[in-house]
Image 1 (cartoon, rainbow, N blue to C red):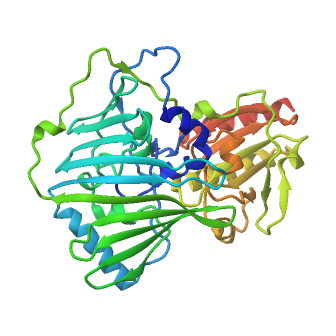
Image 2 (image 1 turned 180 degrees about the horizontal axis):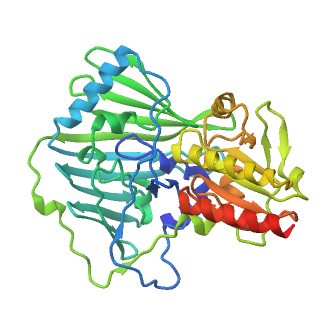
Length: 440
């Protein structure tokens, strides 16, 4: 079963799932204005007890991705615009895609997935997925109002309200967690979708009458996309991820049978719920966080100067531990709010610290932030591992989304935990810190 294989491979492919099958973008199980919360575990098996929840959940939108920090040169700009225009002209699109999650060098087998896609403007789509050598198959259908996900092998389904103008929607059930769909090109401006979230985009190679290769850089990974030089639509792509300072190919995809603007019957975009299918409720990212009373792991991170510092250095004093990324605007806003909170606590002459660990980001992110915020009272640190699934932040601290914040007591144990950023969360953090300070 794929669920068993995936459980054993979660650290290998967890970050890969954020790459985005179908449309070459970072994918996620949860996007929201409160923060970016990727989650790679807990999506394959049904909950042990049936939960009575509303049948229709509202799918949250991606509204927090940063724009590329490096301006594209004119040749790259022209190619990306042609790529975007090709999608704008596409009224219907259908193809078959083979996806290979490449095995690491520890003897595990590569994972091979076959995907069939149909899309029709303005907002109809269908995705069928199967796994080679496993009894695993699933379907995702967008009928214009609802997004249906159905895991055939487990007879489980999800029904979510289709967001308007969403940049992308990540599958949340079974093997659909490997898939971004329905196609975001039928929901938003293709140019925005292609460029948003990248730190840079550039032409890797351009050959007349052959292929155009576009290199897209993102925190911790690089994507190469091969475009057809005539229709500017992608035919294949590879994803390379930074693993222990080594750039490794982790995903390889190829499209065949691509058809553009050919008739597709609307009946293909309807979904009839099979008899006796059970509703699946995926766990939220906060359920993975360390619980109150648990001693925090003694991980080591780097200072801006490259010095390795163990978390145990702060044992004996209370502190906030927050994980953030420069590319996520709400994450940076969270740091600003914690700066203000720390200044208020220090004015009260309390011995308190805020440790801000930059995670799942490029290696220069912390240096850039430090230069722009020279007088920050926060203790800035950096995770030396840039990929999500290999980081101590993910493995040891249960963090499935950013920003994530822990309040730690003098004894080194968790008092409270929060994920995301908004006014209510900051209020809760402030009240918890004030109560802790008053008790010292």
